[in-house]
Length: 349
Image (cartoon, rainbow, N blue to C red; front, side):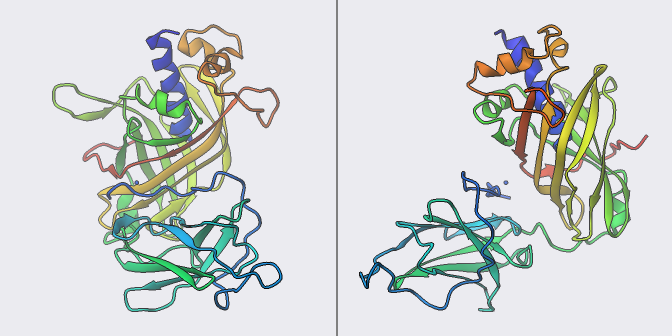
């Protein structure tokens, strides 16, 4: 496999797939549990530490780690908080509590992973207050652990009118993104991604926001970012803006036309939070399922619909079944560093 094919594959998986499926200080991405979680317990803490054990056996379970850890700053106000225990706590009713700097209690919902060793907690309201110190505590069997962290400024109310975002365009750095999926392949491909992803804002009102996208280029001499004229503008549809400055699209099926080839994207979802002054988008995430069967000619691998999946297999990665049949699909999940505004550039035609 030559570097040119790999570079082209990168552009297709992650400049179309991530284009369609579009951490402050290293933000913590959502989702640290590997296994599928059971149904939400809806818990907001228990009624105290448990003596636990079988037949009165003394309980010696201990919380061993909390994320975000003490001293963390720029923490995503909509992210998950993870507590790790040294034994299964599902039958022990651990007490999970969260308070702000004033000591006011913040209700949380939590779930256990399949081992019972990890608990994932999220704010019941969907978001914590931005730019605020919080203390997360976990107690079980009279053993307690806590961590203090501060949320990022992302989430502060817009200081501009939402309609002022219309026409703005942001630079998403594909090379520095954290690719959770494709597992085993995303990190390799990301090293070849030098062209910027451009995400633009179309029509905006108080409850919805239109998201546009295309590929850009960086001038090697000046560093200026411009739109590539040989790429179409993709309309990613309308996302909810009811929780402004946070936006989140509903999973939807779309198709991207890339150099004449149609690339379906299933369950596309894009989310992120605008800075209060509109100068950047923070904590953006993108996910979707890309159909690779038409990508072969675009990466110089011929018209065989299995060409891209065969290439990916060299990295130990397997394609999955597409919703409309055929094992050609690639699951994409990416988390982006704060994406700055590009002054004077718009994707509205």
